[in-house]
Image (tube, rainbow, N blue to C red; front, top):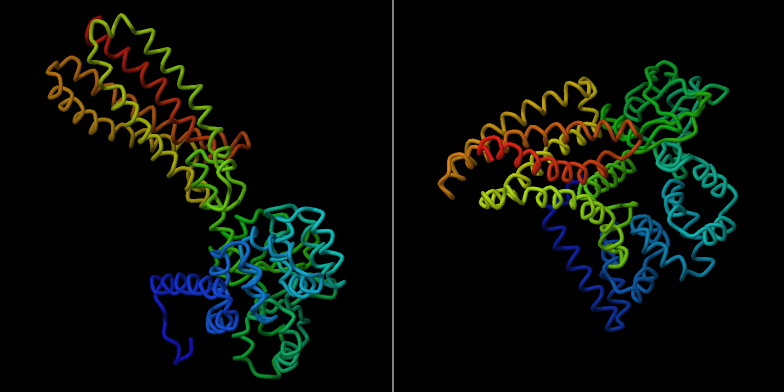
Length: 462
Protein backbone atom coordinates (compact mmCIF):
# COMPACT_ATOMS: atom_id res chain seq x y z
CA UNK A 1 0.00 0.00 0.00
CA UNK A 2 1.42 3.41 -0.93
CA UNK A 3 2.15 5.98 1.78
CA UNK A 4 -0.53 8.45 0.68
CA UNK A 5 -3.37 5.93 1.01
CA UNK A 6 -5.18 5.69 4.35
CA UNK A 7 -6.58 2.26 5.24
CA UNK A 8 -10.37 2.23 5.52
CA UNK A 9 -11.92 -0.02 8.17
CA UNK A 10 -14.64 -2.43 7.13
CA UNK A 11 -17.47 -0.54 8.85
CA UNK A 12 -16.38 2.72 7.16
CA UNK A 13 -16.25 0.97 3.80
CA UNK A 14 -19.76 -0.35 4.37
CA UNK A 15 -21.01 3.16 5.10
CA UNK A 16 -19.18 4.43 2.01
CA UNK A 17 -20.84 1.80 -0.20
CA UNK A 18 -24.25 2.68 1.20
CA UNK A 19 -23.61 6.37 0.56
CA UNK A 20 -22.42 5.77 -3.03
CA UNK A 21 -25.45 3.58 -3.75
CA UNK A 22 -27.99 6.07 -2.38
CA UNK A 23 -26.29 9.08 -4.04
CA UNK A 24 -26.01 7.25 -7.38
CA UNK A 25 -29.71 6.39 -7.38
CA UNK A 26 -30.66 9.95 -6.44
CA UNK A 27 -28.55 11.45 -9.26
CA UNK A 28 -29.96 9.00 -11.81
CA UNK A 29 -33.52 9.76 -10.72
CA UNK A 30 -32.76 13.46 -11.24
CA UNK A 31 -31.28 12.73 -14.68
CA UNK A 32 -27.91 14.15 -13.59
CA UNK A 33 -25.68 11.76 -15.56
CA UNK A 34 -22.60 13.96 -15.33
CA UNK A 35 -22.91 14.11 -11.57
CA UNK A 36 -23.37 10.32 -11.39
CA UNK A 37 -20.30 9.78 -13.57
CA UNK A 38 -18.21 12.11 -11.39
CA UNK A 39 -19.45 10.31 -8.26
CA UNK A 40 -18.08 6.96 -9.52
CA UNK A 41 -14.62 8.26 -10.54
CA UNK A 42 -12.86 7.71 -7.18
CA UNK A 43 -14.80 4.54 -6.27
CA UNK A 44 -13.22 1.06 -6.48
CA UNK A 45 -14.65 -1.29 -9.17
CA UNK A 46 -15.95 -3.80 -6.59
CA UNK A 47 -17.81 -1.00 -4.77
CA UNK A 48 -19.24 0.31 -8.05
CA UNK A 49 -20.55 -3.19 -8.75
CA UNK A 50 -22.17 -3.25 -5.31
CA UNK A 51 -23.79 0.14 -5.97
CA UNK A 52 -25.16 -0.96 -9.37
CA UNK A 53 -26.61 -4.16 -7.89
CA UNK A 54 -28.58 -2.04 -5.41
CA UNK A 55 -30.24 0.04 -8.12
CA UNK A 56 -33.67 -0.61 -9.64
CA UNK A 57 -33.32 -2.82 -12.73
CA UNK A 58 -34.24 0.05 -15.05
CA UNK A 59 -31.23 2.06 -13.82
CA UNK A 60 -28.56 -0.68 -13.86
CA UNK A 61 -27.74 -0.32 -17.55
CA UNK A 62 -27.71 3.49 -17.37
CA UNK A 63 -25.23 3.42 -14.48
CA UNK A 64 -23.06 0.81 -16.18
CA UNK A 65 -22.82 2.85 -19.38
CA UNK A 66 -21.37 5.78 -17.41
CA UNK A 67 -18.16 3.77 -16.94
CA UNK A 68 -15.15 3.84 -19.22
CA UNK A 69 -14.36 0.72 -21.23
CA UNK A 70 -11.49 -0.55 -19.04
CA UNK A 71 -13.34 0.15 -15.81
CA UNK A 72 -16.57 -1.38 -17.15
CA UNK A 73 -14.81 -4.69 -17.77
CA UNK A 74 -13.50 -4.79 -14.19
CA UNK A 75 -16.87 -3.84 -12.70
CA UNK A 76 -18.72 -6.40 -14.82
CA UNK A 77 -16.62 -9.26 -13.39
CA UNK A 78 -17.65 -8.28 -9.86
CA UNK A 79 -21.40 -8.14 -10.58
CA UNK A 80 -23.76 -10.90 -9.45
CA UNK A 81 -24.56 -13.38 -12.22
CA UNK A 82 -28.23 -12.31 -12.35
CA UNK A 83 -27.23 -8.69 -12.95
CA UNK A 84 -24.63 -9.77 -15.52
CA UNK A 85 -27.29 -11.70 -17.41
CA UNK A 86 -29.76 -8.80 -17.24
CA UNK A 87 -27.17 -6.37 -18.61
CA UNK A 88 -25.91 -8.62 -21.37
CA UNK A 89 -29.42 -9.06 -22.73
CA UNK A 90 -29.64 -5.27 -23.09
CA UNK A 91 -26.18 -4.68 -24.55
CA UNK A 92 -25.64 -3.86 -28.18
CA UNK A 93 -23.56 -6.38 -30.13
CA UNK A 94 -20.42 -4.20 -30.06
CA UNK A 95 -20.72 -3.70 -26.29
CA UNK A 96 -20.98 -7.45 -25.78
CA UNK A 97 -17.84 -8.07 -27.78
CA UNK A 98 -15.86 -5.36 -25.96
CA UNK A 99 -16.84 -6.47 -22.46
CA UNK A 100 -17.14 -10.26 -22.67
CA UNK A 101 -14.08 -10.64 -24.91
CA UNK A 102 -11.92 -8.77 -22.38
CA UNK A 103 -13.08 -10.75 -19.35
CA UNK A 104 -10.66 -13.26 -17.86
CA UNK A 105 -11.44 -16.76 -19.24
CA UNK A 106 -12.40 -18.27 -15.87
CA UNK A 107 -14.82 -15.42 -15.06
CA UNK A 108 -16.25 -15.67 -18.58
CA UNK A 109 -16.78 -19.43 -18.19
CA UNK A 110 -18.52 -18.83 -14.86
CA UNK A 111 -20.83 -16.29 -16.54
CA UNK A 112 -21.63 -18.70 -19.38
CA UNK A 113 -22.59 -21.35 -16.83
CA UNK A 114 -25.37 -19.05 -15.63
CA UNK A 115 -26.67 -17.95 -19.04
CA UNK A 116 -29.20 -19.76 -21.24
CA UNK A 117 -27.61 -21.92 -23.96
CA UNK A 118 -29.04 -19.72 -26.73
CA UNK A 119 -27.29 -16.62 -25.37
CA UNK A 120 -24.03 -18.53 -24.79
CA UNK A 121 -23.95 -19.65 -28.43
CA UNK A 122 -24.48 -16.07 -29.57
CA UNK A 123 -21.73 -14.77 -27.30
CA UNK A 124 -19.25 -17.44 -28.37
CA UNK A 125 -19.74 -16.40 -31.99
CA UNK A 126 -18.86 -12.81 -31.09
CA UNK A 127 -15.63 -13.65 -29.24
CA UNK A 128 -12.23 -13.39 -30.86
CA UNK A 129 -10.85 -16.78 -32.04
CA UNK A 130 -8.31 -16.94 -29.19
CA UNK A 131 -10.84 -16.14 -26.46
CA UNK A 132 -13.39 -18.50 -28.02
CA UNK A 133 -10.82 -21.29 -27.82
CA UNK A 134 -9.92 -20.44 -24.19
CA UNK A 135 -13.59 -20.40 -23.18
CA UNK A 136 -14.40 -23.64 -24.99
CA UNK A 137 -11.43 -25.25 -23.23
CA UNK A 138 -12.78 -24.38 -19.78
CA UNK A 139 -16.39 -25.26 -20.61
CA UNK A 140 -15.19 -28.68 -21.75
CA UNK A 141 -14.35 -29.66 -18.15
CA UNK A 142 -16.92 -30.80 -15.60
CA UNK A 143 -18.46 -28.22 -13.29
CA UNK A 144 -16.80 -27.60 -9.90
CA UNK A 145 -13.43 -28.98 -11.05
CA UNK A 146 -10.01 -27.35 -11.31
CA UNK A 147 -10.27 -27.35 -15.09
CA UNK A 148 -13.50 -25.34 -14.99
CA UNK A 149 -12.22 -22.59 -12.67
CA UNK A 150 -8.62 -22.25 -13.94
CA UNK A 151 -7.33 -19.49 -16.18
CA UNK A 152 -5.24 -20.42 -19.25
CA UNK A 153 -3.58 -16.99 -19.13
CA UNK A 154 -0.21 -17.64 -17.48
CA UNK A 155 3.46 -17.20 -18.38
CA UNK A 156 5.28 -20.36 -19.45
CA UNK A 157 9.07 -20.30 -20.02
CA UNK A 158 12.01 -22.60 -20.76
CA UNK A 159 14.65 -23.25 -18.11
CA UNK A 160 17.49 -22.22 -20.44
CA UNK A 161 16.35 -18.56 -20.37
CA UNK A 162 18.40 -16.14 -18.25
CA UNK A 163 16.90 -13.79 -15.70
CA UNK A 164 17.47 -10.81 -18.00
CA UNK A 165 15.74 -12.56 -20.90
CA UNK A 166 12.88 -13.61 -18.64
CA UNK A 167 12.27 -10.06 -17.37
CA UNK A 168 12.17 -8.81 -20.95
CA UNK A 169 9.72 -11.60 -21.82
CA UNK A 170 7.49 -10.70 -18.85
CA UNK A 171 7.26 -7.09 -20.02
CA UNK A 172 5.84 -8.31 -23.29
CA UNK A 173 3.42 -10.88 -21.81
CA UNK A 174 2.25 -9.21 -18.59
CA UNK A 175 -0.74 -7.48 -20.19
CA UNK A 176 -2.16 -10.75 -21.52
CA UNK A 177 -1.47 -12.83 -18.42
CA UNK A 178 -3.69 -12.93 -15.34
CA UNK A 179 -0.81 -13.97 -13.10
CA UNK A 180 2.85 -12.85 -13.18
CA UNK A 181 3.98 -13.45 -9.59
CA UNK A 182 4.63 -17.10 -10.47
CA UNK A 183 6.43 -18.15 -13.65
CA UNK A 184 6.02 -21.72 -14.85
CA UNK A 185 8.91 -23.60 -16.43
CA UNK A 186 7.99 -26.31 -18.95
CA UNK A 187 9.88 -28.68 -21.24
CA UNK A 188 9.45 -29.18 -24.99
CA UNK A 189 6.28 -31.23 -24.39
CA UNK A 190 4.69 -28.53 -22.16
CA UNK A 191 5.20 -30.69 -19.07
CA UNK A 192 5.63 -28.70 -15.88
CA UNK A 193 9.20 -28.98 -14.56
CA UNK A 194 9.57 -26.04 -12.17
CA UNK A 195 8.26 -22.77 -10.75
CA UNK A 196 10.03 -19.44 -10.28
CA UNK A 197 8.54 -16.69 -8.09
CA UNK A 198 8.79 -13.09 -9.22
CA UNK A 199 10.64 -12.31 -5.99
CA UNK A 200 13.29 -14.94 -6.70
CA UNK A 201 13.65 -13.61 -10.22
CA UNK A 202 14.19 -10.00 -9.10
CA UNK A 203 16.78 -11.02 -6.49
CA UNK A 204 18.85 -13.14 -8.90
CA UNK A 205 21.70 -11.89 -11.12
CA UNK A 206 20.80 -11.21 -14.80
CA UNK A 207 23.04 -14.02 -16.13
CA UNK A 208 21.47 -16.75 -13.96
CA UNK A 209 19.27 -19.22 -15.83
CA UNK A 210 15.82 -20.24 -14.70
CA UNK A 211 17.00 -23.83 -14.36
CA UNK A 212 19.37 -22.71 -11.58
CA UNK A 213 16.80 -20.86 -9.47
CA UNK A 214 13.52 -22.66 -10.15
CA UNK A 215 11.82 -24.80 -7.51
CA UNK A 216 11.47 -28.39 -8.68
CA UNK A 217 9.35 -29.55 -5.74
CA UNK A 218 6.03 -28.49 -7.26
CA UNK A 219 2.55 -28.41 -5.76
CA UNK A 220 -0.01 -28.94 -8.52
CA UNK A 221 -3.54 -30.23 -9.15
CA UNK A 222 -5.20 -32.18 -11.95
CA UNK A 223 -7.90 -30.77 -14.21
CA UNK A 224 -10.47 -33.21 -12.76
CA UNK A 225 -9.77 -32.43 -9.08
CA UNK A 226 -12.73 -31.04 -7.14
CA UNK A 227 -12.63 -27.28 -6.64
CA UNK A 228 -12.84 -27.70 -2.85
CA UNK A 229 -9.68 -29.85 -2.94
CA UNK A 230 -7.97 -27.12 -4.97
CA UNK A 231 -9.01 -24.52 -2.40
CA UNK A 232 -7.63 -26.64 0.43
CA UNK A 233 -4.37 -27.10 -1.46
CA UNK A 234 -3.86 -23.34 -1.86
CA UNK A 235 -4.84 -22.79 1.77
CA UNK A 236 -2.56 -25.56 3.08
CA UNK A 237 0.57 -24.40 1.26
CA UNK A 238 -0.13 -20.63 1.48
CA UNK A 239 -0.02 -20.22 -2.29
CA UNK A 240 -1.17 -17.29 -4.42
CA UNK A 241 -1.87 -19.71 -7.28
CA UNK A 242 -1.58 -23.40 -8.08
CA UNK A 243 -0.78 -24.86 -11.53
CA UNK A 244 -3.25 -27.24 -13.19
CA UNK A 245 -1.98 -30.17 -15.29
CA UNK A 246 -3.78 -32.72 -17.46
CA UNK A 247 -3.44 -36.50 -17.37
CA UNK A 248 -0.17 -36.29 -19.30
CA UNK A 249 1.29 -33.79 -16.79
CA UNK A 250 1.10 -30.94 -19.33
CA UNK A 251 0.47 -27.48 -17.91
CA UNK A 252 -2.94 -26.24 -19.05
CA UNK A 253 -3.85 -23.48 -16.58
CA UNK A 254 -3.61 -21.86 -13.18
CA UNK A 255 -6.10 -21.42 -10.32
CA UNK A 256 -5.58 -18.15 -8.44
CA UNK A 257 -6.30 -17.35 -4.80
CA UNK A 258 -9.09 -14.86 -5.63
CA UNK A 259 -11.05 -17.68 -7.28
CA UNK A 260 -10.43 -19.89 -4.25
CA UNK A 261 -11.88 -17.28 -1.88
CA UNK A 262 -15.06 -17.23 -3.97
CA UNK A 263 -15.21 -21.04 -3.89
CA UNK A 264 -14.77 -21.24 -0.11
CA UNK A 265 -17.51 -18.66 0.40
CA UNK A 266 -19.83 -20.46 -2.01
CA UNK A 267 -19.23 -23.89 -0.45
CA UNK A 268 -19.63 -22.56 3.10
CA UNK A 269 -22.92 -20.89 2.12
CA UNK A 270 -24.23 -24.10 0.55
CA UNK A 271 -23.30 -26.12 3.67
CA UNK A 272 -24.97 -23.62 6.00
CA UNK A 273 -28.14 -23.66 3.89
CA UNK A 274 -28.05 -27.45 3.79
CA UNK A 275 -27.73 -27.70 7.57
CA UNK A 276 -30.95 -25.72 7.77
CA UNK A 277 -32.68 -28.03 5.29
CA UNK A 278 -32.68 -25.42 2.50
CA UNK A 279 -31.83 -26.58 -1.01
CA UNK A 280 -29.21 -24.38 -2.66
CA UNK A 281 -27.93 -24.40 -6.23
CA UNK A 282 -25.47 -21.56 -5.68
CA UNK A 283 -28.14 -18.91 -6.24
CA UNK A 284 -28.29 -15.75 -4.14
CA UNK A 285 -31.10 -16.58 -1.72
CA UNK A 286 -32.14 -12.96 -1.18
CA UNK A 287 -32.44 -12.26 -4.90
CA UNK A 288 -34.80 -15.18 -5.59
CA UNK A 289 -38.54 -14.64 -5.87
CA UNK A 290 -40.68 -15.83 -2.96
CA UNK A 291 -42.18 -18.77 -4.88
CA UNK A 292 -38.66 -20.16 -5.50
CA UNK A 293 -37.74 -19.49 -1.86
CA UNK A 294 -40.75 -21.47 -0.66
CA UNK A 295 -40.01 -24.32 -3.08
CA UNK A 296 -36.41 -24.62 -1.84
CA UNK A 297 -37.47 -24.70 1.80
CA UNK A 298 -40.62 -26.82 1.64
CA UNK A 299 -39.05 -30.17 0.67
CA UNK A 300 -37.49 -31.08 4.00
CA UNK A 301 -40.31 -29.42 5.93
CA UNK A 302 -42.71 -31.84 4.24
CA UNK A 303 -40.38 -34.76 5.03
CA UNK A 304 -40.28 -33.74 8.69
CA UNK A 305 -44.04 -33.20 8.77
CA UNK A 306 -44.71 -36.69 7.45
CA UNK A 307 -42.09 -38.51 9.52
CA UNK A 308 -43.08 -36.76 12.74
CA UNK A 309 -46.49 -38.37 12.43
CA UNK A 310 -44.63 -41.34 13.92
CA UNK A 311 -44.20 -39.28 17.10
CA UNK A 312 -47.92 -38.59 17.14
CA UNK A 313 -48.62 -42.31 16.71
CA UNK A 314 -46.37 -43.19 19.66
CA UNK A 315 -48.03 -40.62 21.92
CA UNK A 316 -51.45 -41.84 20.82
CA UNK A 317 -50.47 -45.42 21.69
CA UNK A 318 -49.67 -44.34 25.26
CA UNK A 319 -53.12 -42.98 26.08
CA UNK A 320 -53.54 -45.38 29.03
CA UNK A 321 -50.25 -44.28 30.55
CA UNK A 322 -51.01 -40.58 30.04
CA UNK A 323 -54.49 -40.94 31.56
CA UNK A 324 -52.86 -42.19 34.75
CA UNK A 325 -49.96 -39.69 34.70
CA UNK A 326 -50.86 -36.76 32.44
CA UNK A 327 -47.95 -34.68 33.78
CA UNK A 328 -45.60 -36.77 31.63
CA UNK A 329 -46.71 -34.87 28.51
CA UNK A 330 -45.39 -31.60 29.96
CA UNK A 331 -41.78 -32.78 29.59
CA UNK A 332 -41.92 -34.11 26.00
CA UNK A 333 -40.89 -30.75 24.41
CA UNK A 334 -38.01 -30.41 26.90
CA UNK A 335 -36.63 -33.86 26.06
CA UNK A 336 -37.02 -33.74 22.28
CA UNK A 337 -35.80 -30.13 22.09
CA UNK A 338 -32.67 -30.87 24.12
CA UNK A 339 -32.00 -34.04 22.13
CA UNK A 340 -32.35 -32.16 18.84
CA UNK A 341 -29.89 -29.51 20.02
CA UNK A 342 -27.33 -32.10 21.13
CA UNK A 343 -27.66 -33.96 17.83
CA UNK A 344 -27.33 -30.73 15.83
CA UNK A 345 -24.12 -29.87 17.70
CA UNK A 346 -22.60 -33.28 16.97
CA UNK A 347 -23.58 -33.23 13.29
CA UNK A 348 -22.29 -29.68 12.86
CA UNK A 349 -18.79 -30.43 14.18
CA UNK A 350 -18.55 -33.71 12.25
CA UNK A 351 -19.75 -32.20 8.95
CA UNK A 352 -17.34 -29.29 9.37
CA UNK A 353 -14.55 -31.74 10.16
CA UNK A 354 -15.33 -33.72 6.99
CA UNK A 355 -15.22 -30.55 4.90
CA UNK A 356 -11.91 -29.35 6.33
CA UNK A 357 -10.22 -32.77 6.57
CA UNK A 358 -9.78 -32.31 10.33
CA UNK A 359 -11.04 -35.88 10.75
CA UNK A 360 -8.47 -37.39 8.38
CA UNK A 361 -6.49 -38.84 11.32
CA UNK A 362 -9.60 -40.31 12.97
CA UNK A 363 -11.78 -43.09 11.67
CA UNK A 364 -15.60 -42.97 11.82
CA UNK A 365 -15.57 -45.33 14.81
CA UNK A 366 -13.31 -43.07 16.86
CA UNK A 367 -15.36 -40.01 16.03
CA UNK A 368 -18.66 -41.68 16.97
CA UNK A 369 -17.16 -43.05 20.22
CA UNK A 370 -15.82 -39.62 21.10
CA UNK A 371 -19.24 -38.04 20.54
CA UNK A 372 -20.96 -40.86 22.47
CA UNK A 373 -18.82 -40.09 25.54
CA UNK A 374 -19.43 -36.35 25.10
CA UNK A 375 -23.17 -37.04 24.82
CA UNK A 376 -23.09 -39.14 28.00
CA UNK A 377 -21.33 -36.36 29.93
CA UNK A 378 -23.78 -33.76 28.62
CA UNK A 379 -26.69 -36.07 29.40
CA UNK A 380 -25.57 -36.65 33.00
CA UNK A 381 -25.13 -32.93 33.60
CA UNK A 382 -28.38 -31.88 31.92
CA UNK A 383 -30.27 -34.89 33.29
CA UNK A 384 -29.34 -33.98 36.85
CA UNK A 385 -30.56 -30.42 36.35
CA UNK A 386 -33.72 -31.65 34.63
CA UNK A 387 -34.48 -34.04 37.51
CA UNK A 388 -34.31 -31.24 40.07
CA UNK A 389 -36.27 -28.87 37.85
CA UNK A 390 -38.97 -31.46 37.12
CA UNK A 391 -39.43 -32.13 40.85
CA UNK A 392 -39.67 -28.39 41.50
CA UNK A 393 -42.43 -28.13 38.86
CA UNK A 394 -44.63 -31.08 39.87
CA UNK A 395 -43.33 -32.56 43.17
CA UNK A 396 -43.09 -36.25 42.15
CA UNK A 397 -39.60 -37.78 42.42
CA UNK A 398 -40.51 -40.81 40.29
CA UNK A 399 -41.58 -38.61 37.38
CA UNK A 400 -38.52 -36.42 37.89
CA UNK A 401 -36.15 -39.39 37.81
CA UNK A 402 -37.86 -40.71 34.65
CA UNK A 403 -37.28 -37.33 32.99
CA UNK A 404 -33.62 -37.23 34.09
CA UNK A 405 -32.78 -40.78 32.96
CA UNK A 406 -34.62 -40.23 29.67
CA UNK A 407 -32.59 -37.10 29.04
CA UNK A 408 -29.33 -39.01 29.53
CA UNK A 409 -30.44 -41.72 27.09
CA UNK A 410 -31.72 -39.18 24.52
CA UNK A 411 -28.48 -37.15 24.71
CA UNK A 412 -26.43 -40.28 24.00
CA UNK A 413 -28.78 -41.27 21.15
CA UNK A 414 -28.59 -37.76 19.65
CA UNK A 415 -24.79 -37.62 19.85
CA UNK A 416 -24.41 -41.01 18.16
CA UNK A 417 -26.95 -40.15 15.45
CA UNK A 418 -25.43 -36.71 14.90
CA UNK A 419 -21.93 -38.10 14.44
CA UNK A 420 -22.73 -41.33 12.59
CA UNK A 421 -25.28 -40.12 10.01
CA UNK A 422 -22.86 -37.75 8.20
CA UNK A 423 -20.45 -40.67 7.64
CA UNK A 424 -23.30 -42.92 6.52
CA UNK A 425 -24.69 -40.43 4.01
CA UNK A 426 -21.25 -39.58 2.65
CA UNK A 427 -20.57 -43.29 2.05
CA UNK A 428 -23.85 -43.45 0.08
CA UNK A 429 -22.78 -40.53 -2.10
CA UNK A 430 -25.27 -38.11 -0.49
CA UNK A 431 -24.58 -34.65 0.89
CA UNK A 432 -24.03 -35.10 4.67
CA UNK A 433 -25.05 -31.52 5.41
CA UNK A 434 -28.35 -31.70 3.53
CA UNK A 435 -29.34 -35.16 4.75
CA UNK A 436 -28.18 -35.21 8.38
CA UNK A 437 -30.13 -32.40 10.05
CA UNK A 438 -33.66 -33.56 9.10
CA UNK A 439 -32.90 -37.21 9.89
CA UNK A 440 -31.33 -36.35 13.24
CA UNK A 441 -34.34 -34.26 14.23
CA UNK A 442 -36.73 -37.03 13.22
CA UNK A 443 -34.74 -39.81 14.91
CA UNK A 444 -34.47 -37.92 18.20
CA UNK A 445 -38.14 -36.96 18.20
CA UNK A 446 -39.50 -40.42 17.40
CA UNK A 447 -37.07 -42.65 19.31
CA UNK A 448 -36.67 -40.14 22.14
CA UNK A 449 -40.39 -40.09 22.92
CA UNK A 450 -40.51 -43.89 22.79
CA UNK A 451 -37.56 -44.15 25.23
CA UNK A 452 -39.19 -41.64 27.57
CA UNK A 453 -42.46 -43.56 27.81
CA UNK A 454 -40.67 -46.91 28.28
CA UNK A 455 -38.53 -45.54 31.12
CA UNK A 456 -41.57 -43.85 32.71
CA UNK A 457 -43.53 -47.11 32.64
CA UNK A 458 -40.66 -49.00 34.34
CA UNK A 459 -40.00 -46.41 37.05
CA UNK A 460 -43.65 -45.65 37.76
CA UNK A 461 -44.62 -49.32 37.62
CA UNK A 462 -47.51 -48.61 35.25
